[in-house]
Length: 411
Image 1 (cartoon, rainbow, N blue to C red):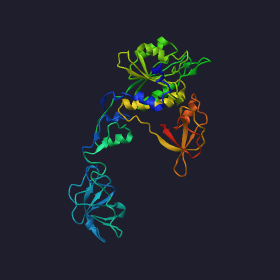
Image 2: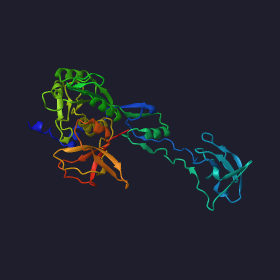
Image 3: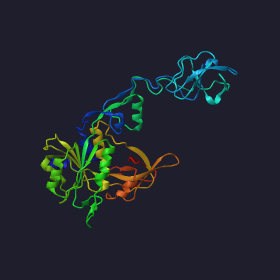
Image 4: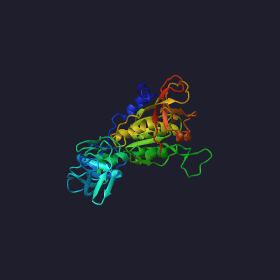
């Protein structure tokens, strides 16, 4: 009984710590750059060439020697330098080379005069200048990065900008973490798939669709298993036949007569690490490993059937788990905001409230939790862009009080 009690009503931090214990990158593979979006680097990425590899013009204009620039001076046009077609010779005294943005600056030149300040007459050009010489308009070699620089650290998630950096450094492929295989199983007699005709006492199953989308966005490979009714043998059979590194169940997580997921998985050697969490919504959330299925203790995260509960706990637990299994940082990206509406004192469970953010005239993030936080309301979640944290036992909060929040990725 004592061991069971130690698994119940864990704090969010305690529960997450138990879920992350021993979680590490599953493997490494090489993928071409065009297929690397969203993947996690499995090795640091270094530059082996300066970027740009030469002094480059920042403007369209004329490359000259600064020392030759004087009022009334005319310059002999010596040629042209374009991107990918450098002028082959140094610029000599009194010469000017027509140059375009991104083109190599010829040796000897240390100034690009923008074309708006130039007046060409046949094979010569003169420049209109102010009292002081204009800026150089030259991007120095290695101004972005130099050979040997660390470009991206191991564990970095590859977004569009980081892919551009890897491409600019000439890397055609990258070593990345293997994507965890995540099987998602919804259970309950009341569920029917969208598009089917529900009975009067049934509802459309929605949680697995959201969770699969989140898994893909967070670096995993999602497989939606066929939703199962409240049947011990059927639940055990579909899990035994599935291939996964992490199983996420939706529903059947509590202790009622129809909450059969944990009993069904007992046949596969379910060893519980977390039984309940002192969180709102999502108290029935649980976690364990399958020790007798011949796969070395595959992880199982049990989420409540109410969609908001499931999605809140996915943010708190599933996202960090996937990060750990890909070698990324599992820490939550907590930020701060000020309340736009008062909140009552909180109860004994940590409360993560769906909320919306705005920016006020002073540039502060103002956050307004939705009045109705019922755990079944998907419509509220669809309008939220963050979760506001109310610690256990927190006193009433007023407008303008600072609160912690967890941003939600919205398109």
